[in-house]
Every structure is written in C-alpha cells, then in structure tokens.
Image 1 (cartoon, rainbow, N blue to C red):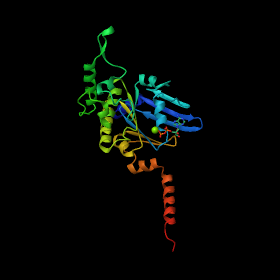
Image 2 (cartoon, rainbow, N blue to C red; image 1 turned 45 degrees about the horizontal axis):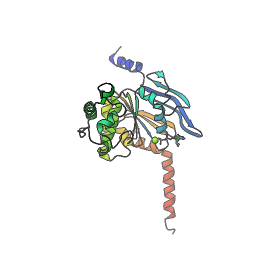
Image 3 (cartoon, rainbow, N blue to C red; image 1 turned 180 degrees about the vertical axis):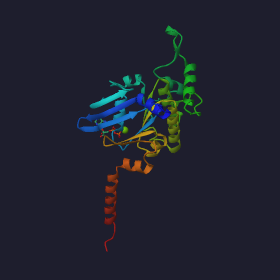
Image 4 (cartoon, protein in one colour; image 1 turned 90 degrees about the horizontal axis):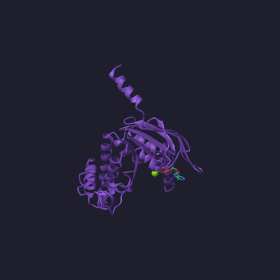
Length: 279
Ligand SMILES: Nc1ncnc2c1ncn2[C@@H]1O[C@H](COP(=O)(O)OP(=O)(O)O)[C@@H](O)[C@H]1O
Ligand SMILES: [Mg+2]
C-alpha cells in the first residue's frame, strides 16, 4: 500500500463524528426539512448556510436534542442515535452556543464559567465554592482561545465585548467536554472587528480537533473559516461542497436563489418603466 492509499484508508475507517441521513422534519403543516443528509467530521468546520426560514435552526435543534426528526436517521461516530432532550446531547459532547445567550451579565467571568457546576472545597456544612480555582481556570481557558484582554476573572460579563462573551461561552463548553460545537449565527449582531475575533476563535477550536457547526447567512464569514459547506434552501440541502470548490460569487448566488434574483431584476425594471416619462 502506498502512503497515499494508507491515509485514505484511515479516513475511510474513521466515521464522521455526527451524521444526518435523509432527515425530514415536519411541524404540523410546515415541512421545515426535507431529505437532508450531512456529515460533521472531527477537526472540521462545517458551515450551514441559508436564508431566513431555510431550516438552519431546526436542523441544529435535531443535533442538540431540542427536536426529534419526523423521519431519517442520525449517527454519532457511526452508531445510530437519538436524543430525547438537550441534556442527552450535551452528555454525549454536543454543545450549542447561542448568540448572546447562556451568559449572565451581572455575574463575574469566573461565576459564569462555572454556573451550575461550581468547583468546591471543604466537606459537609463547610463546603464552599472554590473561588480561587474558578478564577484561575476560567481565565486560563478563555486566554487559551486567544482572548488576552480578559485579565480579571471578577470582571462582570456585562462589561465584556460581544466577541469576548462568545469566547467565554465557547471555552466553557469545551472545558465541560464538547466534541461538537454548534454556533448559531455567532457573528450576526457583531461589528466587523468583533466578528473577526469570533472567526479566529473558531479557527483555534478547530485546531484542537473539535468539530464545529457554524450556522450563518454570511457567506464571507463562512468561506473565511469553513472546510465543508451545506446550503439549505426551503428545507432542502441545495448544495454541499468543500473549501475551494465554489467561488464567493457562486455561493452568494446560490444563497440568494438565482431565479429569485432574475425575477427581482424584471420587477425592478417594471418599476423604472412606471417612473419613466412617456414620450
Ligand atoms: N416550532 C416550530 N413550529 C412550527 N414551525 C416551525 C417551528 N420552528 C421552525 N418552524 C418553521 O420551519 C421553517 C424553518 O425555520 P428555521 O429552522 O427557524 O429557519 P432558519 O433558522 O434557517 O431561519 C420556517 O418555515 C419556520 O417557520
Ligand atoms: Mg435560525
């Protein structure tokens, strides 16, 4: 076997960490997802792109145990699995970080990092939260994601920037065992610089071997950090490709829905005609 064949062989035997096979999700009359298949691989950033209402949130809610599919199959490391609730997904290492949620602005960095699972010292009635340990670990973990401006674990989270808050939520998820990190529109409400902070965070997370699902409708952000891409249109996987296979223009066109843009062009011309003084 040549070296090339050997490495291909390794890739073949390592299943995707998470896989959807022909997933359909119906809410009463609404067909939110139809026959969607996708693979999330170890150490890859998989971007899920699509317009509002395309089904992106529904899809990640199936990954994270919020919803169950109407039909189709989900696999975790090659074995069929279903999550009855978000806790079951979290226990298997699937963490979702929602934009701006999950952090408490009036609490410190250290307290936010450990909220609900505080490190303690002492026994029985003497048991106390170990604040020194909480401060040390939270700063260490946030700084490990390249966020050096957070230097005081007692700082209130409300005073952090948007990117720094994401860093807090992401480093916390990783510390508590996330192997798949799902980010739902992490850059949507951020300014240019803050969005760049988040994209750099994503790159660092990927280098740790964690799989990232990046939900976004920003093709620029997706192409900057993505390895693999799935475009959802009206609940269907309209295209999937790897980095380098599509130009930015092609991606933007796909997302806008080429036909709809042509229709728009015609309608705009009709409006122009209304305002053109007739001869
Ligand atoms: N809980 C729900 N009940 C009924 N319809 C829903 C529910 N969640 C989403 N939908 C519908 O499913 C479709 C996809 O929505 P969603 O997944 O939120 O899209 P996206 O996140 O891409 O904007 C939309 O038509 C939406 O109205
Ligand atoms: Mg959504």
